[in-house]
Image 1: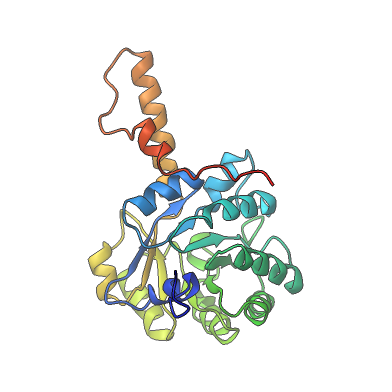
Image 2 (image 1 turned 120 degrees about the vertical axis):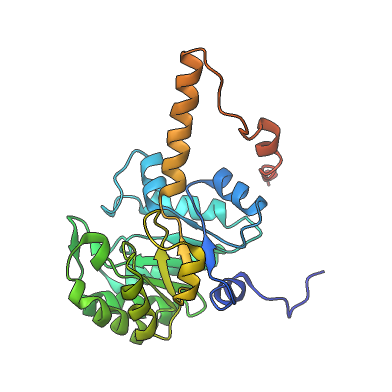
Length: 269
């Protein structure tokens, strides 16, 4: 029997941002990928909006995958570890609608959301309005970890507004800030110094490594769509090897290894 004092997934996920080492957060796109990452020992997983969208044959960042995102979230919430979900820009401009979605996600067991301030057409949202979305989520579901994504470096627009956006989103109640596309150590260090919130960056092969990011004060390192793109590349490589009667890459996860991670279907009422 579980003790009533046992930490919830919300608490566990929040605590993962305040350890000695940063949280390395891999991003999954379906139940099997998330379950394999959990089985590997990662203490939490996130979703990649590109992976969820592309798997459904829809574009990323266009606000077109609300149903697919929620369906994926419901499945991933069955995992024993905390899950945070990328909800793009909230799939709506109305604060109450964004808060409704966040409340539904929390109710099914999701521990956090990633809310970006980029919009369809490679535009940046008005930070004042985006702050209203953050505030609406926190007012409705205060336990949910809101990672406020600042897309100035990701889009290559409005670099000068980055610190203002970080401050505004923190004041609105965000629990963390995410600045993808930022790889310069000096700029990362300035963002960390500008806020008391845990800072999240996107892993880049051309940027600082995990140890260097930890030294800069980064508290969370996401893989974004990297794992999904790597999986697609590996699948094509294996298909090409079969076609060319060449050896397939070793170390491919086995059928039974995946089967054992999948929960039994619910019994009908």
